[in-house]
Image 1: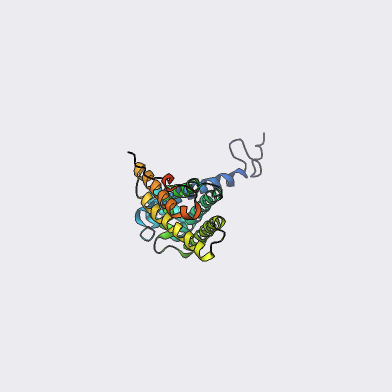
Image 2 (image 1 turned 120 degrees about the vertical axis):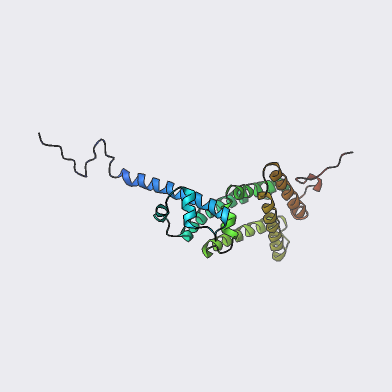
Amino acid sequence: MPEPNRSANHATPDTPAPEARPVRRQARGERRIAQLLEAAASVFCETGYTAASTNAIAREAGVSPGTLYQYFPNKEAIAFELGDRLMHRWSESHGTALAAATQDLPLTQLLDAVLDPLIAFNYENPAFAVLMHGPDIPGRITQEFDTVHQGLLTRIEEIISGHLPGTSRAETARIAAMSFAVFKAGLDLILAHEGGERAAYVAELKSVMFRYLDPYLGEESPACAPGARIDTP
């Protein structure tokens, strides 16, 4: 009896259909890329971007340098991909925070709605600060950060203008810039601590920002500010 035709156009029970193979290869490749980017984030945080090497990233990922080079030609390409993904998450975090920044919220709730997701993002993605603020970072990454940064400042200015319609544009920009500078300084302290100390620094940051913004935006008593200390007899 002649053997059945097992041409490439006919899948056998033991052989997946040809169209299924690229899907599996693509999924495997995405997993490998995610593994390499996670390793790169760890190495960048440990050594800084400049001192990091592709060999160190491959070692952290548990693969050979040759495997790494199948996906990325050099460290800069890794940084671009990691930066793009972090920037996308950062933009989503900004969107969540600023969408909640409605002008009818009391100032304490406004600070919670804006600051909590931004603090959480930076805590969960420590490589973001390394890539956005470290020396010798590829210019495209820092340019993208500057764009998002400017968008955040613009939104803060809009919120302030909504509360203070008669305020000049220069003063509104000044209040927004100062608010963001205070946030960045407080964020550095928050990320340098863990557990209860971190929560305490979050409360302190909100208290500082409340006391600065309340004369402009709030209708609450400073005694109700987050972290305010109330003396008892």
